[in-house]
Structure formats: C-alpha cells, structure tokens
Image (tube, rainbow, N blue to C red):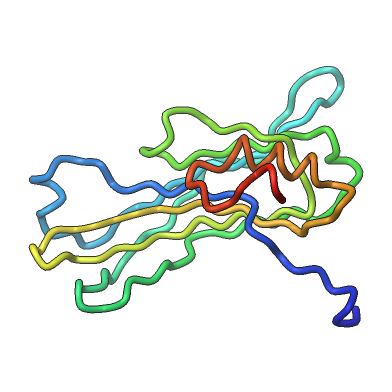
Length: 165
C-alpha cells in the first residue's frame, strides 16, 4: 500500500476501570495481579446461537513507584479483519471483577481491542491499579453509522465523541 491509501487505526471507544477493593487490602503488599477478561464472537449457526472464545488472564507484575511516569502495559490484543462471514456476528466482552455484565456489541471490521493495565505504588505505599479496554478501527465514510453505534455501545470514558466519528 502506498502512504496515500494506507489506513490508520483510530480510537472508537475505551473503558477504564480502577480497582475498587477494600482500602486495607489495597495497602497490603501485592506480588502480582491477575487481569482477567472474556471475549467471544457470537453468531447464528444452524438456527442456534453459537459463540467462540472465552476467558483468559494475564499477570501484572513489577509495579511502578509514584515518582515514575505511569505507563500502560498490554495484557492482550484482539484483531478482527474484514470477513463477510462475520457481518451478522456480535462481540461479547467483559473485564472480570470490573464489569457487572457482559458488554455485547455488533461486530465491525476491521477491529482491534486492547486490554491494558497500569499499576503504581503511591506515595502512601498503597497499590493503584487500573485496567483499560480500548477499541480501534479505521474510519471509512461508508461505515460511519456502524462505527458510531459501536462507540455508543462500548465507550464509557468519553474520550471519543461517538456522533462525530
């Protein structure tokens, strides 16, 4: 592809969650934190709903201290390339322990979902842990309505104005 025709990934929604456990537990020493997520694609097959995917986890280690510039670290990346067989599929996803229920959005493609985490030890010696799920796609004029619908269903952070994609 030439530079003129190359598509760029654009943010179409994000969901960030801070750890909301007891203060006493937050201020204990942590060796690692399990980041668990669920991601599956669902569609209809032989008249029945069928889902592929499941739950997985990554271990967060090596927290940063309060004097360092906090950085996000990747736990998982999911990519969906254009596929005519997936046009009527839905994506089900959740961050276990953070989402109260599965988020279900209509599958769009191309789509990239990143699950990232950030862990710092504050000046008070307590753990500050956040997890973020972000969705990216390419912005094409003929898909603006689908992108805006996806954004409205997925985004909770408000970094993207869904009606202006």
